[in-house]
Amino acid sequence: MRIYVVLIVSVFLYSCVQETYPQNIMFEVDARGLEFDSLSVRGDFPPLDWDTNIRLEDPDGDSIFTKEIILQSPYTFFQFKCVMDETFELFDQPNRRVDFEEDMSTEVRIRYNKK
Figure 1 (cartoon, one colour):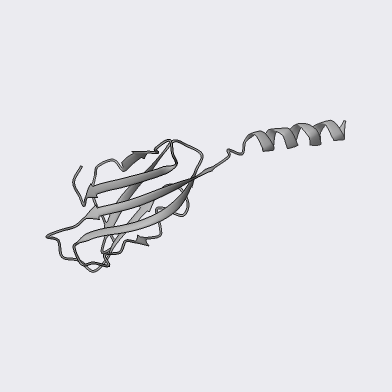
Figure 2 (cartoon, helix red, strand yellow; figure 1 turned 45 degrees about the horizontal axis):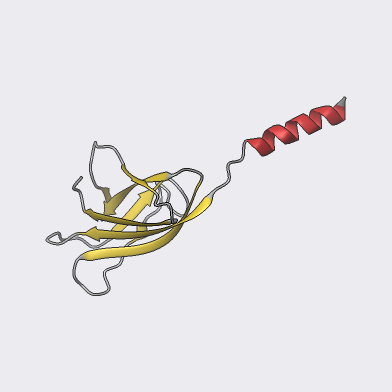
């Protein structure tokens, strides 16, 4: 009897784990005309999370901030928001939702704080 319980619990636990797929995400955030110290993203799947900033970079100084990440997701989309100097964009509005491209490489081009 004990072996059946262990077997059933093992099958149940294994079936509850969703496989994740790597998605290459390229963020491009237009922040022209805005003054701030840092621009980051937060989101719902690793390496993004809602408590930690992933800082975007502007190496050429054109105020278009970029960052490429590999995101692990069991779904066909993810949600995120930009964070400027620790303040979330789109206050009292839903998170941004991005559907993944089929080739597992998705470009996200947005204007900061604009839908």
